[in-house]
Length: 149
Image (spheres, rainbow, N blue to C red):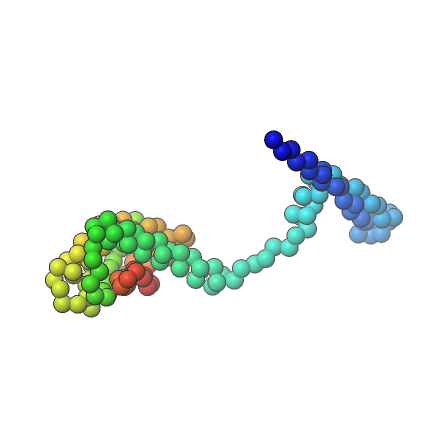
């Protein structure tokens, strides 16, 4: 059995002075717990641009929808024949409504498998933020599934 002895965290000294300079500066030694709080209070927050965050969350949302459809295709053991483009309508709770199979090759069986997979993927995942919900989606099935808003 190996025992590791860690050095206890060391306190830090903080200089305190009043705004009006009525009292001389005072040095206070903070124990480790207060040191952490002091560090947190004096750390500047980094703002992420809203557009950047929105794009990131849209990407995550698209990946979640694609993963749901991928799972259905894999479970059904669907052999992907030709690239297929699908437009679908979803309700606020993720239920798939109208499905329009676009360019999907000439095989009626393949088109039917795609239609069935999209319907079985319902309900689709909820967006990470309500304002990211899109009623109309375009899904492109190739080797993998891609979703466009």
